[in-house]
Image (tube, rainbow, N blue to C red; front, top):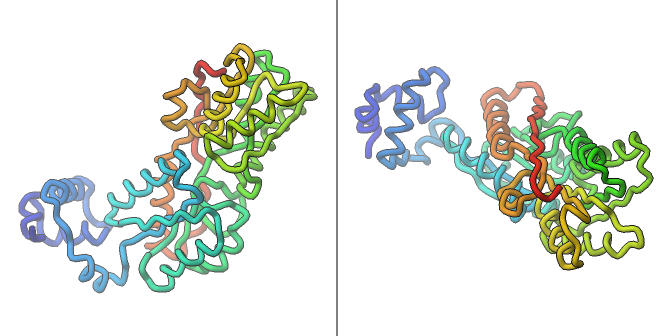
Length: 324
């Protein structure tokens, strides 16, 4: 399939097709949509090498994810990929595990001009080291909101969301609300714990117990909940910082012969498909929209290197289900 054929199918000029393929902002939205639809229907594959030589771009984005097994991260990546492809880009995925050596290996693609920019979902504590490695290359930090610094970022207000969860549990009569948290090197973990503790303080609730899970897995949630239940004064509500941890907590409660929410209410975080499957009350993050917005910020940075740092705070939603 040639570019001439694409132009014919779309009913536009060859020049218009070329501008669409090169991400020119001079193309009318209607014409761009017609060209993209023609490309999709004909499975057209442009000559990427010729395009790269012509534009001095690779049209590749490096996406570094802390844990691709986390359903929330997977949904964010889907949003990143959808928006990248919509704009003529492809992604290279690196499951870094927030390990700086693995990150360094992936970031070597920047110096080799294999990628035009990078989106990271690494722990906030790793940003200074990453900044040294990335230098002035286009970069967006995704799902770890930074209120200062030189890197653009997209996230939600984790403190507000956490405060809302704990307030809801307290208003429903829960007096012993525990938190299952994760690694405090992640800023979201620190912020959600801050929100949890602030509501307990404001409401004068003396019970304050935080159990730190080894990772964000179902098994880690089971283990963390078992530790909470082994206490002489177990909780009557649990707030977990991810849906997978909350799912594990539900299993441990069931194994102990207790009932949810009668004996213990459980709330998760992220709003993944898993939460809907197990009727889990949760905070829903706009995961795919977070990924899409990160791509938009990155492409703007690629096109306009002097663009100022942008920090985008997106909305979250509390979804009440049977677990609380």
